[in-house]
Image (tube, rainbow, N blue to C red; front, side):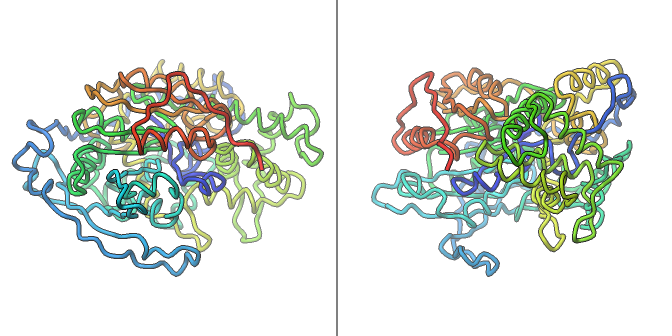
Length: 541
């Protein structure tokens, strides 16, 4: 995301070029499909329970100017070689340096409890040409910046690695930074694949998280992570923040620009989220974009001899949706004995739509194995990847950060009564195939109705007073963060320049040499792309 931003790390095809972040409607049990008419949509018309609100007003004075925060801003990170992970035999993690950053749990009470933010550094290859540090965030919320840098240190090879110390960090609740992980593996297997969530689906997770992490949940939100980034900037010795955020990372970067306008260096926000839109409306817009991508994939499939969807491009998407929805009554059993449910299959399908046309052949083959051969193993593997489940059945420790951060940031304004009916009707009109199976999965993604803790954060246009130019990257065929969101964010940020990629797929940097060249030049030399610049996607192959 993450209104809904990105919940996962990049699709594998993009990760080869850049491990970026993604917003999705899959994962965490949030896929959609089925056949429910608008009149039969869920009838939740009562207001959700009122959560505990934990205001986090901006301290005055802010940042390093606050005497109570000076010890945090003045710290130095003790860097040591990261431990090599024997499971990644092609990567030597010890070439990257690991460290910890101490920050207040509650910025309104700096003398209280603290937490440690996990940080990694890949030093600049050409120290004599070093610009400074470049913080990166892969999206989510829930994506690990530590994993992004440590597991693929060569992804920034070229101008960025030459001239920047690449810095990855795990935001609050993520990875190695006080991870929020609330359900055991068995319970999560059921939670992410069920086709019949019921009214208590979201409450199951909310109750488990409150029981385990009630002390930290009020302080998980993105604005506190933006404050952590400013402490990290100072600890790294940088006067200004240079930052590259993808998907949900664009929201994190936007809040930083709003909170610390005088500390904005060179910011690139790729796969942009519009922070002014409430969660439900963002979900509707996102599902509408995924519906368009589904139709494009199915129509393309119909032109191939091996397509399981027939030869009629106009009917192909409907045929695919009918099959996926039908798994609710007749799930496929896989070689492992686990079942491919409709929910899991839709999760896999949407996961595949994060990529561009180059990944459609693999997705088409996986669909064919399920539709023609009755084998759901490949689609289930996609769903597992989307849900951060490994081959041994263990889930990532960041599995619940998506919900915890989203709900802290803006899980308010849950539609009820007539507003809820109108939202379901709009969802059915704009994404009829993706959402008919279980529309509540789409509208309440994540489900914040029962979440016990929220910050005072609300969706709002970013009001940054920074004089620095910020580069916003949008892709015309991006279903996870629709292009219109990039246009709106660029307009909110004042001096921002919008850089456009033509083509399918989530984010732009990993899909286009033209985008990479422009972004690299801006970050390394401050060269601002010309207004109105549009880039083609890389050719297939």
